[in-house]
Image (cartoon, rainbow, N blue to C red):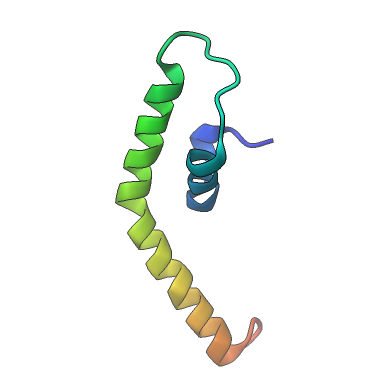
Amino acid sequence: MVSLEDATIPLLEAVVRDGQTVYEAAPGVAASWRFRALNELELDRPRFLRMRDAWLKRVAERGLGGR
């Protein structure tokens, strides 16, 4: 189990895309969370993708244990 407040970019994407609200403690809580998640994805996803691509390039060139 993972707190959605600490979710990584890939997990946030999956929850926003596939998640369903089962229970809200108060009206609008799910919408408020979704808004914050979409905002975080908009701001942080490009940086995450650049880091991911750089890491994959490095692994392709040097392998996982390479220097």
